[in-house]
Amino acid sequence: MNPSLRVLIVDDHPLFREGLCSLLKRLAPQACLTQTSSINDALTHAPDRFDLVLMDLHLPGTEGLDGLLRMKAHYESAAVVIISGDESPVTIRSAIQQGASGYVPKRTDVNVTIQALQLVLAHGVYLPPEAMLVRPADTPPTPSSPIEPLSERQRAVLRGLLQGKPNKVIAADLGLAEGTIKAHLWAVYQVLGVQNRAQAMYRAHELNLFGALGPERTTL
Image 1 (cartoon, rainbow, N blue to C red):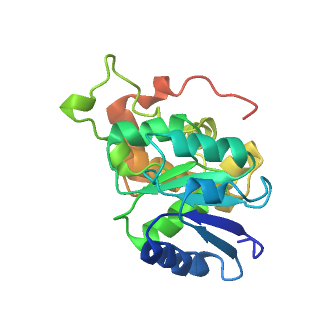
Image 2: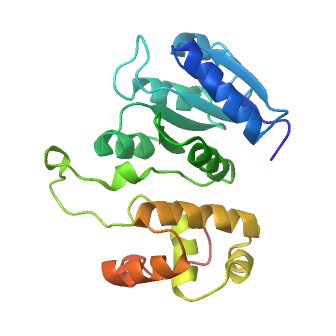
């Protein structure tokens, strides 16, 4: 983990901000942490100052995904992760579609949160299991693919897994570190609702994902 990691925490609850600071110190002990309670205050910093932004979705003076969009526009090079009590699958998927690098419900276990942030810092996208739930009121007009939440890189990793390739070979094929492959696989397991490679293979057959993944690409 980069010891010079620069993180901005945006939440209007001081105790929750302090909790995130404690968690981040476990993730990167030498990280530079900045706290603020509002979007307006957060946007006063230089656009290139932070590598990671952790923000609540529902902050004073914001509505819907407005705060996320403003943060993405200002901090173009930073990974923005939503930390929210809103667990609606529609809200989660909408946030990812609007550029969030991850969505972590506030009740998420500390260790899972750390793994989620590690995935994001490895240039992956984290979606919680809640994102795969569809309530009657949330049902889209047309069915979507079960792998829709996965990024193209995560799909490439899943494709390698389904071809029976070990992590080392997948890493070589994609030009990535083996640790990054493990992080992407963890995200794939979360989406499929499984815990290991064998379960992922079984689930893929069950969902007929071989065709859904599409042809292999040479560039990602």
